[in-house]
Length: 82
Image (tube, rainbow, N blue to C red):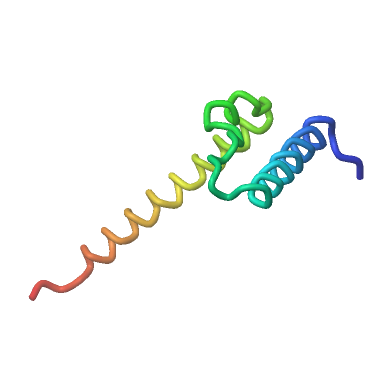
């Protein structure tokens, strides 16, 4: 099974970032950390497929949370009054 170009590119970027951070930590720990990519930079690098996967994860999490709230309210509704 071969990795796609996007996966390989992401892996290479992450490897380079880790190596840069290790080199920085070994050289002078008192210097500020180099920018390892801001949140906005990471969002811009996501492919359409990665966006879809993230949205599916969010929708699934919201559905599970809503089901848990509904189930909890049903259980509380069945409890006898004190």
